Length: 102
Image (tube, rainbow, N blue to C red):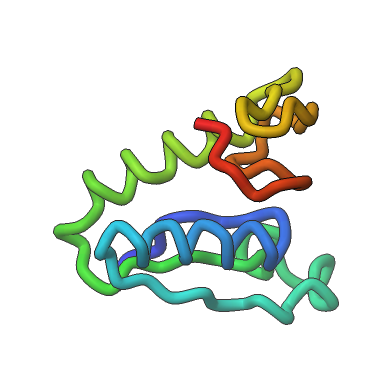
């Protein structure tokens, strides 16, 4: 196992882990309930962490991480081609009709 990513919160850790799983990369979340001990131990030790089951998956996992971070950095809005509803740029599906925004 190899520590791959230290998240700011457990939601981010689970979102990344799910992305990795969808890419066929076996990964696990550790320390998801450790926020209370920050101060007693360094934050990077107590923060939620994503670990890869197989270190050989590291290059593919880095590509998944880069794509995930780029998607989260999108700003602005998207208009749904199906119903013309305005959605945040980070949405992949229209919140109103469920159509794909990609």
